[in-house]
Image (tube, rainbow, N blue to C red; front, side, top):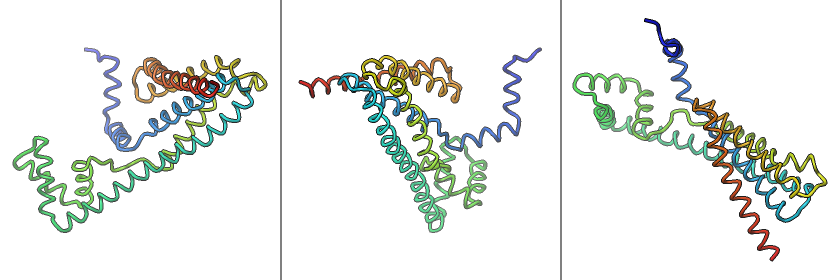
Length: 252
């Protein structure tokens, strides 16, 4: 009986080396989410300036200055916020590690009982359960790590603050500059004359972000592109409506 074409790929994915590599990737932080968050926010935020300027009848020169200032300031602000979030994750892990180290030092039997109940809840019992408890508690580092993941639900490898911040800022700058391209090309024109071009480029940016997300997570790139276009486009449309409302209030 011949093997299904996908069956060969499954066999290759389940060699000892492939399994080890996949498990190693699973424990490390992916910065795709940081990149997507920064990219979508950058495109929406800059498009809001373009939309508001179009409604106010400003020139593209003014829009370009405002847009660049916004991209740099908001991009850095968002990166700083993501940096601090990742830093807090690291500090939280270190705090609970100290707590578990102290508990094991002073009340080891209580901590053994916690391990026992954790794995009993997973369906183990009898001598098998006791053997699991012995193996885990014989290794101090493994003991602490087990408590961190099973009791507190923490990741042993939280994201790097620098990488998280740089991924967010890089994506924000890259996507945030795209709605400004028409204002740079037609620098002396009015913002309302290039608004459609900026809108199309912004929508294309959302779609490409979704395609990339779909490829990374192996989830139908086209569907992911349409989903991101819809969500990002809705946010951009809301920014446009709010900008027009504020412009009317200011002029009226």
